[in-house]
Image (cartoon, rainbow, N blue to C red; front, side):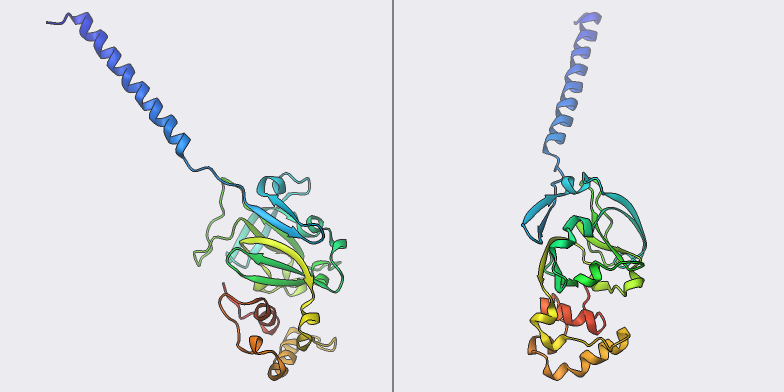
Length: 237
């Protein structure tokens, strides 16, 4: 028969073993837990470069911005973001060029230089950056918008459309303006309103390439994306 003090000693040792096992299990779970991986953004507006989430968030011009009516979320949202104009260096984009934004899901949209570089009370583009360990919520449609998202302050001042709020951004590059690549899409300066502009484009529909006449596909090609943006935003994601 074991003495009482030996029984107590054995119970203490057993308790220490269990505690040590729990500590080891906890450390193992930390080691195997998935780590957040920094996203990468490809920029090509002169010299190609790749920027990570940490590098963008470390920029001195990063700011907290409030979007009163976010197109994707259909409500107010707050982001850590950098001004798109200073990120790109607008002097590297020709006045008659476009900025092409490519998303990870294949969506492509072109933004004209004049829209990006508007002065005065025009819309101001920002590149929102998703923090590594604080992912943004999904949209009402169940879509994730990270890791990078182009948002606008004062979008109504420049008539920004929903297709000009690209999310899941993977690359940004300068390209020739779409009116130079597809002259049939050129709209004269005598079109004062978005409505008349869309009407002018629709009038030219018979002369447009077949790739544009086919309508807005999912996912859209670059050409149909540009066309649909102008005639009223029928591309949906």
